[in-house]
Image (cartoon, rainbow, N blue to C red; front, side):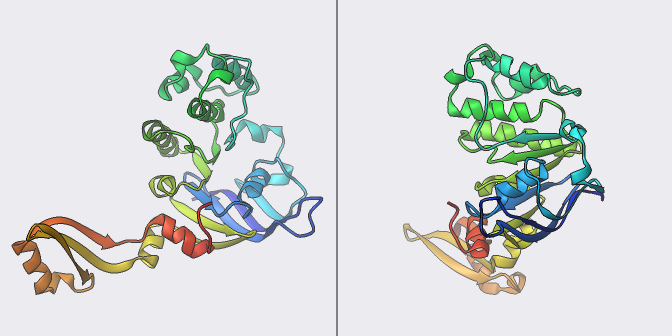
Length: 286
């Protein structure tokens, strides 16, 4: 599979900074995958995203975009990418549809605005000025804006932050469909449910360096406990027993418990993505 981006020994220092904020990171983003870059605030995620979207230059190292040097990309590059920043930026005194028509005018390739706005539940509110939108409505409009040019690669930063579960699911379903249709997604987020539900691979960024790069499933297997916890009802109370996962098929005590007791829940020792984040980065989610 071809790489959408190949990043080799990337370093970057802001002009007024004394030290590099990106310190020689190497990774790739494969075509047709959802790649998540995770890490605490200030780790370098947003800087990396800005470099990959050509909002920052002056970096050292090599970045190729579909096997071509990113530095040599012309403005046609922006026809192929969509970007959803964490903080939605719209013209508040314009209506939602006026905003979308304006931004759509920048591109040769245009998506169906009505279809996108209907999907996220905003078409009926299209003639309302954006300044009157709630935070969640602005977030949804921001996602529509990122899709206006039918992008080849989609960059998303905290794409569902501030959304209720229903609207968050709509956005995540649209991202999954975009991937199924061949799109590539570069995602940064602190929301581990989004990571687990969407990402094919993830990398952890800590103080400008990269830690582990793997799939969410492999990380959960690596950091989880190989055990099964059974909760069952006995004498009017909930009791619990834990069994080693290895050899559980031959564990007579486990099988006897399943047959004799009223089972309430069975859980594996799988570690949550939140716990993995803390373990790998050494810090909390915020």
